Length: 218
Figure 1 (tube, rainbow, N blue to C red):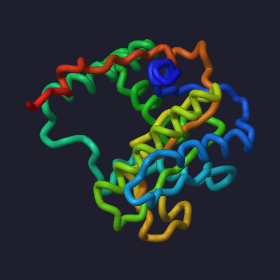
Figure 2 (cartoon, one colour; figure 1 turned 45 degrees about the vertical axis):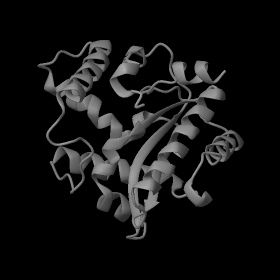
Figure 3 (cartoon, rainbow, N blue to C red; figure 1 turned 90 degrees about the vertical axis):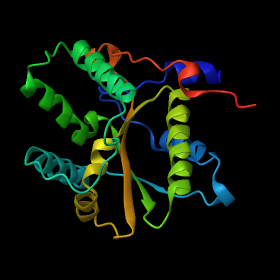
């Protein structure tokens, strides 16, 4: 059962216009909180952004991105290890290839990337936060909860996509949603029912081989 869930889970970027029942969302979030955490602290929050607040946030994020107003945030390592760079390039090729977007078509690539800030039009738009005083262990615990949410969603026929691009604008997100300064923005998360026929959902990525990340020390 678990192997099937982790194998079938994928980052879904096109959703059906079908609402997710409140009770189902609550169950998925409750399941996510079963993730392990150090001293059972259960750090982090999941904020559902809806209605005018969602429109306001999406508009502000899109404008900031188009005007190259990225804040002081970096996810990718600098400099890139070549093995990771190759994985990133392969993932981009899989997505844009499925969409039929040529490498030189920057306008179409930008339009697709901007959909991050619309939460890919998913019926549920979540912003994941963590108190900024937490160190690496807190981020690890929250990451396990996010993955727990993804697997719980998958088990109920729902799809998800984590959106790291939203964390590039923490001050803007805090301002738009009127969050306290102590809230660190971990990521966004789209959740809903996948559109099985959408080209974006046909993109397939691979995982590195066991020998690339596992070794025995005796």
